[in-house]
Length: 461
Image (cartoon, rainbow, N blue to C red; front, side, top):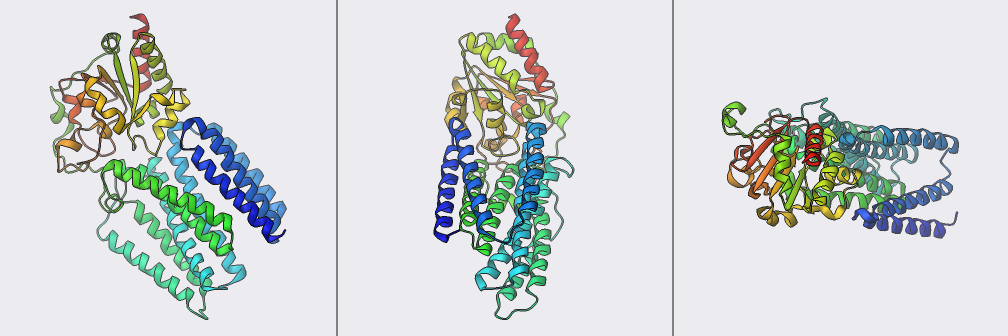
């Protein structure tokens, strides 16, 4: 195929990727954005297959069939609560693919130029960190490993030594007439794999959404480096788009938590922040429990209700019951809105996806900065399974691990109803003074059952 036609097709695919990303910025255009991005990827794959003579079509077709079956099964079977784990695995597979594609190219072609050698080493380093780091993130989210930070003395020095080793071997690989380049490459991959494990183990608690966004960025950067290895323009462009969007998202998440990326990696959150008072002692005699009937009575006269979803709502699969409550309240003339914190849940956009699944109109979803000023005029705020993102300690305790983190100001509402199974802490491992405030009522129980009981009480009232 003529090179000019190939490059033209790659340019068209890149435009489709960009249009797809633009479409994904809003729910109303998200489906169209997905289709445009998929068309771009299909075009890029077809052109590449017909351009390269190194491929075996039988193996590729078999891979497409097997991959399609696995993807279809995952799409049908996967629970919404497990989406963060699935995204972590996807990031890891992307990084792993970059490692083996770059390594295969090095084995077949050898170190043909400094650009190719350095790009291969970068692909191996970033891809291996992404692969093993994503597996650790998956294990933490799946609760195969403790969700809290796992640290040992000197881990930062070990990480630094591994990084220096990767850089030194990359320099050796890039030297003129270098020997044992292929062996060096796999040593880099092994060192980077260990680095990925040790880099993510100390991250935990409320920082997990940040690490998911960061690893997503790494998978894109690894793909871009592999594009330089293969001299494939569309892979460079698509990898760069993923890497850049991941970096932007990581920065947004860090800003939402008032933490730097270095702080996320080197100062773990989720180990209780030095709190010594046990739970019973902290809350004893200061928490007011309520029932679905009492909450329904409050809501019957409410003119404005704000619902704050959290990971607990996802676990309970309560989003459909929440939609029914929303419809009942609006039928009575109340204004109902949803307050979305940027790091609510376990991955970026987790709550938006859950609420969209329940057909809750997107214009009811309000970002933190937009809805915070309105809490003072809110009759009832219903918090379902959220904890750290509504914890006033962020404003009142400068020694708290979440000090300075922007939160949803639900405590300023006239009445706050918190739905939780117990008084257990959230990802950050902190007690929540909101639960013992005068205007706070605790509705204990499973999130879905509590919402169904509340909907029934509203209908009967």
